[in-house]
Amino acid sequence: MCGRFTQQRPTSEIAAIFEAEDLADDPGGRYNVAPTDEAAVVVQRDDRRAVVRYRWGLIPGWSDDPRIASRTFNARAETVATNAVFRDAFRRRRCLVPVDGFYEWLREGTTRQPMRIHDPADGILALAGLWTGRQDPESGLWHRTFTIVTTRPNTFMASIHDRMPVIVPPDAWARWLDPAPVQPGELRALLEPSDDWALDAYPVPPLVNNVRNNGPELVERLQPPPEPLTLL
Image (cartoon, rainbow, N blue to C red; front, side, top):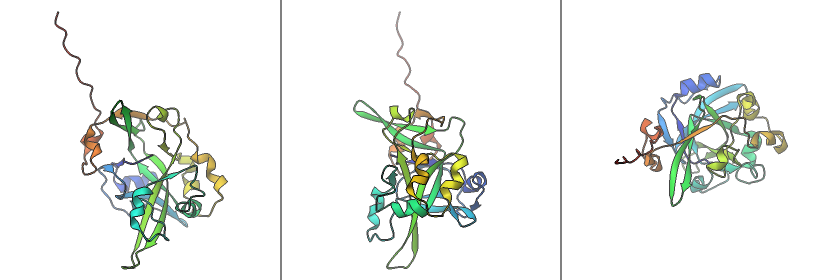
């Protein structure tokens, strides 16, 4: 799964990386983005690519219960083309979720150690996402939401978790963002786990466990305790 990530870069920098227009105008500095938070995503509408802010947790237009978002922040690659919640968005409303890293929790005995997974060269990771819009029946306002597609782990991630987000390579960004409807098989290869990505992981402080915490200290490498002194 993918339940937390960071967006440390300002959206102006994200827009430059994706050759998009910055409509989010966000300064970045977000170290603990959690489901139901707003976050920057990259979308394509006709010939216009833009960075916008949508809420994390997809609420399909036909749903009358916004609380569904707490269960739809991830979409499984194996069923995304057939699941009623995600299949329409998969066919025509795909997005990229630009992150500097994401968190997973490594179980060590009875404890769960938060780990930060990132590009060791500090490049941006473009996670495969889907988005949709829903009109509030009372206010008439449109609310746009997104989900992150997950798949089986690659060799690196298998030692940490049994799922990982789908990472879209730069040469496939345009293909994934293309709003033209697609048949499920056309994008199947992108949803498979790949060992092509050079990823790194390191333990971080348990501060990340609380969604209210935010700051660069959340991504600091947790140092091991010093070895006890041996008296001769």
